[in-house]
Image (cartoon, rainbow, N blue to C red; front, side, top):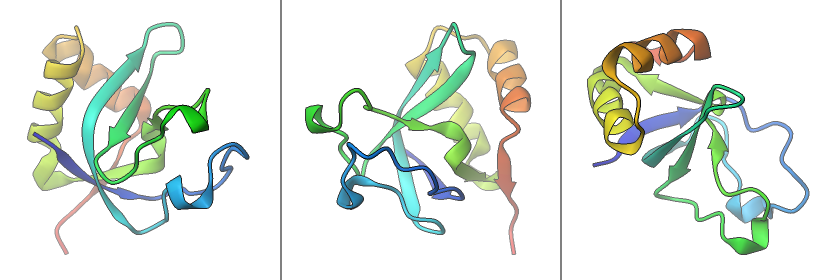
Amino acid sequence: MSVRVICIDEKNKPSVIPASKWVKEQELYHILMIFYSIPSKTMAYTLEEIDLDESCAPYGVFDAKRFAIHQDDLEEFIELAKNCTELNDIEIKELIEQEEFEIIENE
């Protein structure tokens, strides 16, 4: 399962990550895994299209705030979040609200 997202923020690329492994605004990507950081209470993603390998260390994931989720994919996103984390439905919904996700509506 992967969930489509669109990049809404490509700014502040870390210098250790080459441009070829960085996201581009308005490009479509697919989330493979969702990670949740307990201390910072934030989410991050690994993407199907970009492999942040050991050459990009200490970076291995992309901050969730860099992406918007299409409204049609929100249920699939919640299902992937449940599969990738130990969070329950209520915690995932609270985290989504806290993260101030940008939802792309049908045009």
